[in-house]
Image (cartoon, rainbow, N blue to C red; front, top):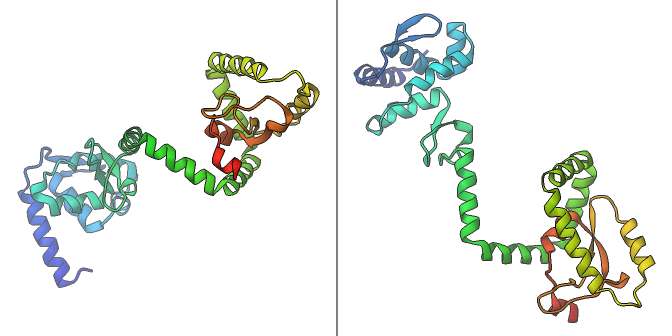
Length: 254
C-alpha cells in the first residue's frame, strides 16, 4: 500500500514516463506490453528481482529488457535515477558503459577498466613520489611486512608456487638472462678468501618463497658489497625484488 504522498509522487513519475519519447514502443517479458507500462510496473515493484517474480520469469530476462531503457537524457534526471535504481544500473562517468550499482563508490561511477587506467595513469605521473613513499613505508614497517608475506605464503603456498611457475614459463628467456648476469657479477664480487662451501649451504637451505639477498648490494649506487656469507640474508621473494639495489648507508653507519 502507498501513502497519499507516495501516490502523488508516483502520479508525477508516471506522467513523466508517458511524456518521454521512448525509442521502443513494446516490451516482451514474457508477455508483450507497451514500454511505458513495463516501466511503470518496474517503478511500482521497486527492484528487478520483484519485477521478475511478478512476471514469472528470470531476473536475467528483466535485466536484458532493462538495458533498453538507459537512454534517458539528463533533462529527466529524476526519472533516469529512478529507473537506474530499480534495475540496479549506473553509467561509468568516464567511458559511458553501463555498470552495476555495486561498482559505484560514493556515487562516483567508474567501471573496473577505467578505475585501473586511472590508477595506472596516476602511478605513471607520480612515479618518483610513489617510489619514495613505498621506500619510507617499508623502512618503518619492515617487520610487519615480512610477517604478512610469510603468513600469506604459508596460507597460499600452492597458489604462490603456481603463479611463480606461470611467470617463469612466460618469461623464461629474460629470467635466465638476468640470472646469468647476476652470476657473472657475483663472481666479480667474490674474493679468493670467500668460503664457497658456506655460500653454497646458504643457497641450498633457502626457505621456499624466500630469496638469498645481499645485505650490501653487489652493484650499489654508493657502495658495493662482496659475495661472502657475512653479506647474505634471507628475504621474502617479493621483498627482495622490491629492495633491488637499495641500501641505507646512513642507517648502516649509525
